[in-house]
Length: 432
Image (cartoon, rainbow, N blue to C red):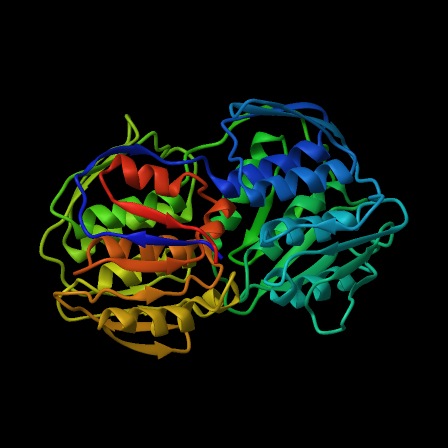
C-alpha cells in the first residue's frame, strides 16, 4: 500500500474541485434506462464512476467518452442480462442501484460482487424490499452481504417498504427502477430516515430525465410507470470533495478559495459551509459566481447532527481537533457501514495526534487541542478518511505518514495535486 508523507504548512490559494460522484452515478444509470442518446457533461472519472460505466454497458448501454469533458450514453430503455458477473470494485452506489435495476431484465440471472469492502457492506434492507414485490434475490452467503444474485422478470408487487436507517442508496435504487415496472411502485421508508438530501438529489435528477416522483407524505413515494427521456445533463462540482478544502480553510490563517461550485442542484454536503461558520471560521459565499472563500479564526467546539450528511463526519472531526472545548457529533450511526467503520476508525486514529476522543454509538465526542503531534495514520482503505487525515497533518506540529494513497481514486484522483497547488508539501512513498 502506498503511503504519503505530509509536512505542516500551506500557502493558500484557489482550487476547483472535481464533479459530483453522486450525480455522475445517477446520470449514467438514467442514461441506460432512456432510449436514445444522453449526453453527460463534466462527469467525474474515478474508479467508482468507472464501475457504474462498466455496469450499464453490461446491462446493454453503449458509451462514448470524449476526453474528460463528456460521456455519451446510448441507452436501450431496458436492462439486459449481463454476460458475466458485474464487479463494482469499491462502489457501494453502483452495487445498490444495479441490484434493483437487474430485476428489470426480462429473464435470467445477474450476479454482482465487489472488493473486500463491498462484500461487507449491508444489502439486507434492499433485498427485503425487492422480495416484497416478488423479486427473487439472494445474498450468496445468506447473510445480507454481497455477492448478490438477482433473477430478472420476477417483479409482481406494486408496494414495498424499505428500512431507511442504513443507507439512502437503497431508496435511490428503488426510485430509479420504479418507472420501468409494469404498474409503478409505492415506497414506504421505515425506521430512522437518514441521508434524506441524497433522495432529494435522486428525485431532482429523475426530473431532468422526464420522470415524476409523487411524495405522498414525509416517508412515502409513488412512482407511476413512465419512460425515461434522453437528455443533456451537466454534472455539478462536488461539495463532498469541496468540504475538505472548505474545512482546511477554517483551520489555517490563509485564505482558501474554492471555485466552480453549483448551488442550483441539491447536495447534502453543502452543509459544510454552515458548519465551518458555526465553528467560528470566516466564510464568504458568492452563489452566483460559485465561489466560497474561507479563512481560519479562533474556533469553538459545537454540537451537531450529521444524520443527513454523514460523509462530512471525517472532515468535521478534524476541524473539531483544533476547536476550543469539546465537539459532539451525533446522528451518524450509518457511517459505520461505509468503506470502513468511520466512527471507530476516527476515534482510534485521532488519538494519535494527542487528541482525546470518545466513541458513541452514533457519533463522536472530540476535545480540541492547540498542538497536534506528528504520527503515522491508517486510512483503512477509505478515501474520505485518507483525505481528512491529510488535512489534519497539514496543521500538525510535525510531519505525518498516512497509509492508503490509492483510495483517493474512488472520488478525488487529483486530491494531492490540488494540495500542491495550495503550497502543501506532500511526498508519495512507494509501496514496500
